Amino acid sequence: MKAIRLYIGLCMFLGFNALVSSQSVSIELSAKWVKGYDIFKKDSIIYFPELMITYRNISDTSFYFQKVSDSRYGLPILPREVGLLQYPIEEYFNHYFKRAKMHGDYTGKHYKVKIGESSFFKMWNVINDTSNIESEEDVDVTNSDLCYIYEYMYRENYEQMDTRDEFKLYYTISDMVPEVILTKYKDKFVFLKPGESYTDTYNLIGFKLLKGSFTFYIRPHLPPYVYTAPIWDSHQSQYVEGKALLPRIVGGYTLYSGNFYSNKITMTF
Image (tube, rainbow, N blue to C red; front, side, top):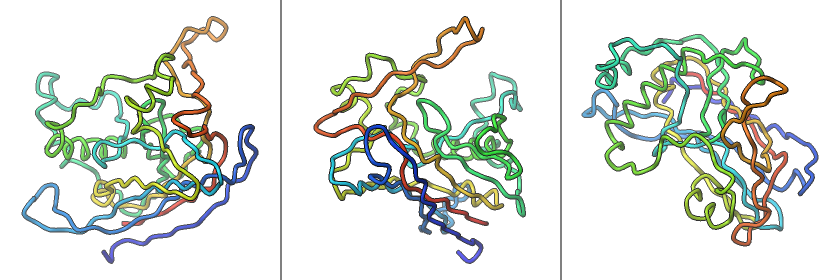
């Protein structure tokens, strides 16, 4: 536990929101150490960090809004570089352990971790610190290393009990009705009465294995819509993601969209 340095700075991101005040919600990052087992040697006890994302309603109105991050049983979801098949395709799905063990060592390197990077699955994206966090589109190899570690953990511990549809990549317009949100997609949203808070926890053992310094970051804005399947835009001659507005009221909770208070947190292993 002495091998980590932790820095937390609360950054007040202010702005205007067409629907409600930007001071109504905060989404805060924090971390703690927990006791567990070595993922490669399950008879060995170790300590590893967890990232906590805490949603707070600091207003007098009951709000609902999209979560900024998804997970699989507390494991963060990360992208993977295309074309990194190290084995014949018929053998690829049998080498989770080997790929997880082949991760790099990033001691002394600095990265930004942008939380909530995709449309349906709110992924994390690890970006080299020299890159522009708002415009970087390439997938750094660090993401692949983390993806393989967490995929191995998922396959070893949770796959057999998982009944979710992992092939769904986008919402549909018909999904954006209160009844569907409250049943099928309730885990993708936060529902908070005035003064309430809710916390999701994410396993950071993969980051500890890679070493290096990681600054976790959330873009402090909640949109009033979700993305739907791409459609062809003849003016741009390319596919663009569609958008579907969220209902204004769901189960007595008012949609919150716009800016919110947030912070960054840096962990160095």
